[in-house]
View 1 (cartoon, rainbow, N blue to C red):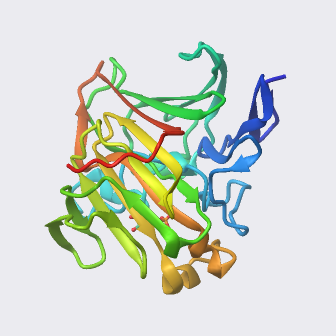
View 2 (view 1 turned 180 degrees about the horizontal axis):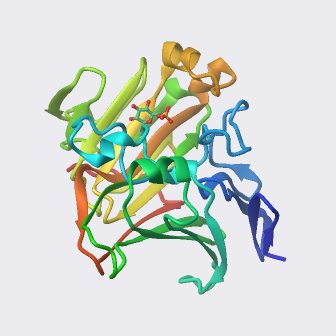
Amino acid sequence: MTVQETETKVLISHPKDASTQVTVLKYGATVISYKTKGIENLFLSEAAKLDGSKPVRGGIPLVFPVFGKETNPEDPLSKLPQHGLARNSHWEFLGESSPKEKDGVAVQFGLYPDIANQELTKLWDYDFTLILTLELTETSLRTNIEVTNPLNSKRDLKFHWLFHSYFKIDDIEDTFVTNLTGAKVYDQLLQENYVERLPVLQFQEEFDKIYSNVSPNILVQIVDRGEVLHTLKRTNLPDLVVWNPWVEKSKGMADFEPKTGFKHMVCAEAGHVKSYLVLKPGEKWVGEQTLCEEKLTYQAI
Ligand code: BG6
């Protein structure tokens, strides 16, 4: 069996090598584990709640329809909690779908207001259809999101999208995030805009920055002493949030364990978050990220 469904999870194993596998929690359609040849790619906090009581701390939570908090009180999105409602909703497992790659196994999940978290849809009463496709190959994981504003909806749908990937790394102080030189950046901690001049991003303290308008040709890589651990390819996801909570912020997160876990994770989050997307009734938007294996590549923007 390459796809196994339980009450709370879906496990996808690669038919040629069962040690290459993805585990998806139906709550949030959150990928909580992605292993290639038995090696885990994603960080998952030991205290992450997997029972639907709060969004998962680790893996790949999905952010929709708002990234962070909307601060304009006039905007209906401001009623939603940080990072929206997709990561706090039980998604429907739609079963297998046709893979794009010859050796791929693909599955789909759906979310609509009828099944989304009712506490939150009460606060933000908009119509939407989300279809998430996950495709596993021997060397990659493709995550594709299709957002539709249904034809019979009465209003425009305004939203952000983000794949909030927590990557597992050996040691944050040996880790670089590359290929963002020249990109516009907003430092969420200093609340300042500037252009990234550093040849690579390094981490020695809390880090929370939004790189915007990064060309789809740019491969973002997570590199440990010259070895590429992770490569991110993006389509229609121009923004990249890079985050590490470091010591103090980790202490403040009850579901972040062990407290030294920040040394073994970095978030590189591909999305569309610097500006909102707007769909008229009947319109659709698609965004995609692929985590894959690539040689060390040096690119500047
Ligand atoms: C990142 C944000 O995407 O998510 C950070 O840039 C935030 O500001 C982090 O702290 C975690 O958010 P949350 O809601 O999962 O604690």
